[in-house]
Amino acid sequence: MKGKGDYSFPRQERLKGRDEIREVFNRRKAVSCAGAKLLTLKNGLDHNRVAFTFSRKFGCAVERNRARRQGREAYRHLRGELKTGFDLVLLVYPGKDDFASRMQQLTELFRRAGLFEGPRIQEHS
Figure 1 (tube, one colour):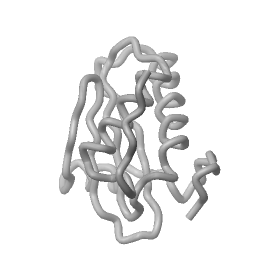
Figure 2 (cartoon, helix red, strand yellow):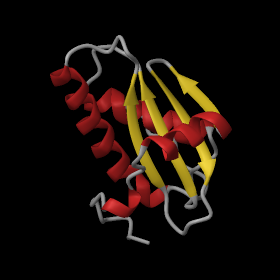
Figure 3 (tube, one colour):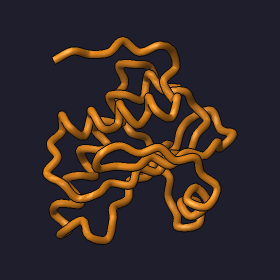
Figure 4 (cartoon, rainbow, N blue to C red):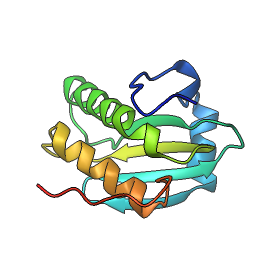
């Protein structure tokens, strides 16, 4: 397991393949917030695997790729605080989201799913 300060996103933590993602969709536990939904499934591994997917109405490739990069970056910042052993699929809906709001979305989804390792102190703006 990588430390809190390690913001890499190694291949082993990427959920790849249609069958693996479909299994999460079929056997998942889901939580949602404005603009996104998180699907979780225990994977029995010592690390999490993550995939980002988008609704069909999301927009052009440029917008999808920007949202994917923002999602990965937000995940890299939060991953040191998460419990391990889960497959995570983040379903993102269209909207004008910047990195700060994407980070807030992921924080809220992980909190609702009970994925934070310990109690998390609420950040105030």
